[in-house]
Amino acid sequence: GQNIDQPTEMTATEGAIVQINCTYQTSGFNGLFWYQQHAGEAPTFLSYNVLDGLEEKGRFSSFLSRSKGYSYLLLKELQMKDSASYLCAVRGYQKVTFGIGTKLQVIP
Amino acid sequence: GAGVSQSPSNKVTEKGKDVELRCDPISGHTALYWYRQRLGQGLEFLIYFQGNSAPDKSGLPSDRFSAERTGESVSTLTIQRTQQEDSAVYLCASSPSLGGRTDTQYFGPGTRLTVL
Image 1 (cartoon, each protein chain N blue to C red):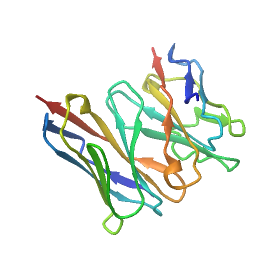
Image 2: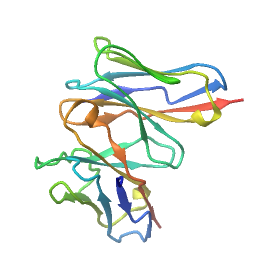
Image 3: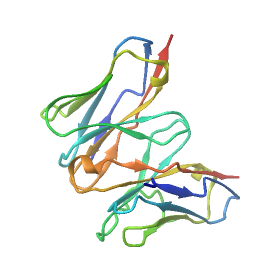
């Protein structure tokens, strides 16, 4: 089976850095995704990791440790528009499974 | 090119009625997922189609829910005898699903279902 854990809510200050953690236990592992979902909108793809290490893309970075079943999404230079839910998703043997998502609130 | 489309965008129905929701995936995408998302909640997996394989129906909450997909094209999600607890946004996503990054899912705008 699949089990994915993330904090349900986080608050951070505009201009700061925030790290959103995700831990998983899955039947097989074939990649981990992060998605962003603004309120009232559909999720959109942010990042993909399949090998250990850090993937950087502008202000967003994603890290994976397969041996620890652990990933994090790092958001730098936070902007108000980054207020959204961030969903961790894991591809197991059969399909992709989503975590419940972390709702991030960016405050001035 | 066109993204994933869903229809209708909004559906209001009376308790006990049947509803049918439609999803048009991106052309060529072999994988198609249906999710349910209640207000302020996470994505709840419903069903997964992959090519011509038997669908994974493990997420369907009751036998009132069913879904079909014709080949690698349109999918319909049917809810029979709707209940108020079925009120939610129903999201469809497709992916090329050839492995790796191609498992990236592209979401449709969703159908907001309200059961009175």
